[in-house]
Image 1 (spheres, rainbow, N blue to C red):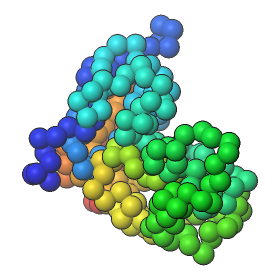
Image 2: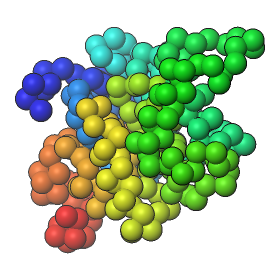
Image 3: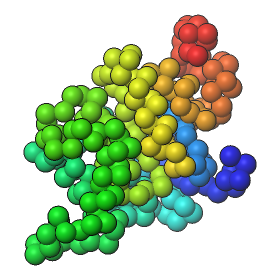
Length: 258
């Protein structure tokens, strides 16, 4: 990654978030390089979901700065942040349940291709949107499920479609919130390979509790404890960090984290 190491895709500068008198994020600072895959880990209540909400615009920080490609996005509405090239998936599938796989993906690509809201436009005639939807569907290996309603997909297929909606709009920075939660070991292994393939060349920040996924996917790991990033390094360095072992990994054998 030496050719991209000097380009910071996503940066947090002393970001803080208070809810009333309670400070949840306590000065989080982080730099994610372009094309890098970073896993955000930490114990329950560490503030991981809050941090994702701040980055994606669901919450505005109480103080600090969030930059996307060098430009500040803190305080912007989620749709404006998305149009600047950042997309997010959620812990719970957030699909158009009564639309088919293909229709979900076509909806996701429209804005990035320059189409705006117009009731007189027939979607079937939008060749570029249809082709892009078909392309993403093939990447997800969901071609045989093309016309199946999202509500009738298996759980793993719904999670794959969720990832598809995240990448369909062409965002360069992706936030994935516990993408393998609720999956069996075999599903997780297949899904991990799918994530690697469909996010190739993109910047990835993911929250994940499965240590096998974390150490199998991430270039670097950020450890969040009580709203602060206490470590940010390679998987090997984080595994050996005594602060991480004490605050998060506890007495778990380091070999068991590989």
